[in-house]
Length: 48
Ligand SMILES: [Zn+2]
Image 1: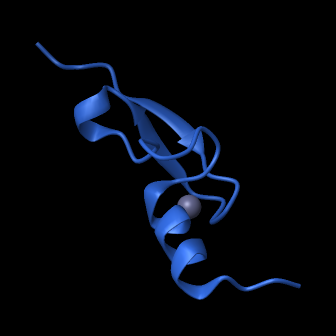
Image 2 (image 1 turned 180 degrees about the vertical axis):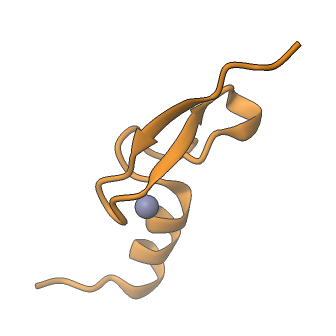
C-alpha cells in the first residue's frame, strides 16, 4: 500500500516538496518554508 504524499510549494525556493506524511516532510520547521530554506536563512541572515 502506497502512502499518500502531499506536496506543498515552498515560499523560499518555489519547489514543490512533500509536507505529508511527517516522515517525508520538508516542512517540520516552518509551514510555508522548507527545512533547507529555514536552515539557509538562519545561517546566512541575508536581508534585502
Ligand atoms: Zn525551500
